[in-house]
Image 1: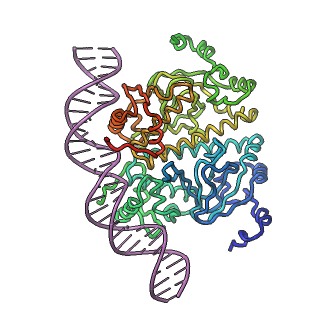
Image 2: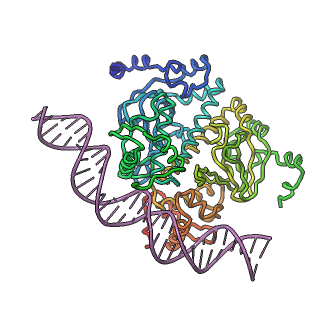
Image 3: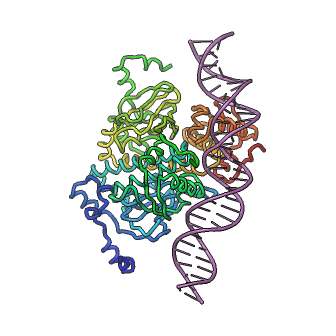
Length: 254
Length: 254
DNA sequence: CGGCTTTTTGAAGTAACTCAAGACCTGTGG
DNA sequence: CCACAGGTCTTGAGTTACTTCAAAAAGCCG
């Protein structure tokens, strides 16, 4: 359907795919949030080309030089760090409207790898140009600070999760978090596809793939969720929320 | 020695304690890093009064309205989140030259508690004024972005630690991290005081106080460190670094 | 000193891991 | 279309790293 874009000549590609924030369905969640039309135009002018990625294709690698932030247009990504012994830790899953690459600002090099979980598209946002624009559009600057701050609080929440939650609570938090993010994008909050493997989920939550599988089975048996391959239905979101908050728990095989 | 300041009248206090970044020993690590003298002066003009805190005194609480960022002048702080079930997770320890409160920008409310670990002093940095200054001093803005980005990467490193390191590696990372930060401040990298309790360390590392105590005993027995109360000497920093990197490990009681 | 908190150490328990095997899916080529 | 190979997921059995519980030792401070 859209294969023509990817096979066309580069020049056409760049031109055809030049972004327009105003026309993008994500603009109320993304960088241009709250901007006036005139300012959105100015943002459009500095935003680079779109970039399409296949499943498993890296958007950037740890250590590569930092030039752009990326806004997810559609699809999903994961970001992960690799330690000295070669093991990975997934630090986040990103979906449409979310910004990638902010960890690279401090050292001018990317601090983690970002990989597409499915066929996806991003807008390249040349950071140098964005910085120039900050001086002219204070609203944009403020919103950018909010986005960075939000990333900080998101990570603090993950630290809380990894530092002192039991497996079932971690998993409930994970499901409820996805649910809320899909809801914010106009999708169902109770029925969605997991775009990542069980292994990715386990890695992100500091658990093994087997634990995730068992957790899913348990939640299924308890009537909390319905699962078919990667399709998930949250049957009892309220109880899941309570579990995520830590006010309710389910015994290990009631 | 400096008690006179705290007991003097408020007005005198504010005046006497008005900050001067140029004169501050931390200015090459803190917000004014890399600024020209003229710009440091402009920063000085917006920076609020200093605030002195006693051990265990809160700097801000979760949910309180966000007005200021804080730069630590001396002393140490911890920041922590409290979940619905009332348990805390320490998200960081801050020392001189480090910035507190960036997690509050996104929601205009503080997202965690910050508490002094010992008698400490901070500079209040009214965020509104700082934002005004960003438009006039681009260097300052860029450095601010670097600081926020650095906080993001720091937290990603903690996620890596909590998500897939064994207890001994976590603890080695913790010690090496403190060592490097003291070194950057001109203090010994091999001999320093732990400003936080064993319980705080355990909480931060996702371990129990008993585990920390056992780890310390083991490291002591292995000749890696010397410990007397809260005074720590790193006897084999190279091996500790290797453990932190994951390239070396010590068996559970060799 | 005496009461308090913090730290250490030991013994027992357990949540989650590892190992292992089989089921299930998915895509490829005959 | 089926067969088969390679990955992903599930389930079970046994192990273990860390926790929990408990008690004593050490430090702190009025």
